[in-house]
Amino acid sequence: MTQSSPGRDIAARQQSADGLTVTTYPWRKGHYEVVSSEDSFVKIAHHRFDLTQVCRILLHENRSFRGHKDALAAALCGWMLDPKGWAPRRRLVALSIGTTLARAEQAAKRQSGSQNSTERPYPRLTRLSPAFFDELYDPIGGLRTILRTLAWDLVYQEFGIQRDKLYDTTMIAAIDHCHYRLTASNSILDRLSVKRSCEVYVLVEMAISGCQGPNVANLKDHYLGRFEKSIPFLYAASTIKLTEKQTLLNAIAGANSAAILRPGILRELFGRTLFYTQNVYAKNDKTKNRVAFAREISTALRGVEPRTFDPPDRVCACTKIIEHGYTRAGYDACHDDAGKLRWNSPAFWSALDLPVPAYKRRSRKGSNREQKSLPSE
Image (cartoon, rainbow, N blue to C red; front, side, top):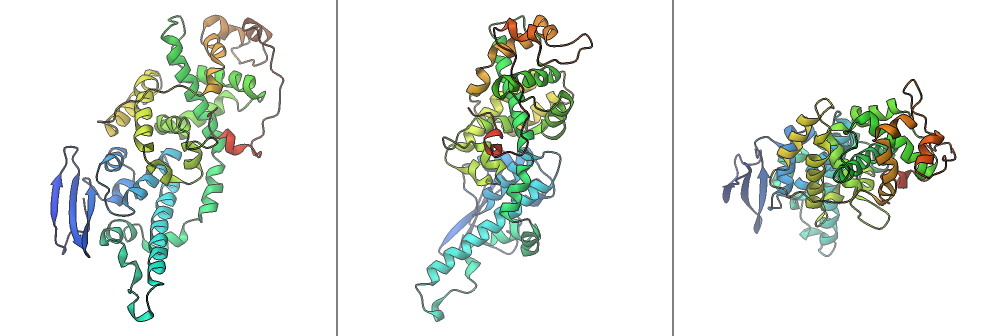
């Protein structure tokens, strides 16, 4: 619902088939557009979060006014990093709106630099459309909110604390993805289970790095407690490379929410998310609320074409471990009589013709945190 229409002339208004409205307003020597849903920006992206309305505006072919989709992208990224909380989302939204404001001021200063003092436009920021102030800036609390928001580098550091949990979560999601592919040719594998995938992850991590990682109870808490609703988005983002060394999830965890608006990235993210949701995430229906969460994501991404993709190479390299860990014989071989996981079980590793991994203490705050935040290689 556009908040900038009262008292302003409307050049055109069009209803979309997806329930969105595109309103065109004359402004200066041209016009600007507002792509709006049923509710205002603060209702769907700031005070609370509505996945369906946010995704549909982001997907709309019209650009909307300057700063609008950037702020929505920031809200989506904040929700991905903490679906149950509000702080990351509001901080990223405030940073996005503040960035748009700063860039507009810088552009105006550059342009006014070629004019004499009597010709300089005042106020400079009128180059931003009225919708920016009516829809975004004023409703979130204006300059007071932006100034109270942590600086970008502090937000980056704050998100960095979650990187190990993101790494654990996306690795478990990748194991589930490998399980999905394995079951296409091996019908004897046990059904997906959060507990089983967490245990297999401990074994995979030992094989990859020699690090034992968190215990299964903590892994389940990361996976189910904090990130469960956004797992398909997080995992899909972890598989999209922006550069040779950086993935989309690295960028998001680095407070760079604008990365999802790069050409071709948003559709790829949503397409992979939908594929994973429908074919992997929803299949783990023994997990409470999983089917409902999958349905919510599918509704939000209605009209998006699912895009198949492969699990990360470093996880695919451990296919034998995943396959063996999801069989009864493999499960028994890596558990003691009380059902407790034994990562150093000779019987388990010898069945795979692999040596028992040499144990290394896991570094939780090492210099490789950037690389460990997602299973990209």
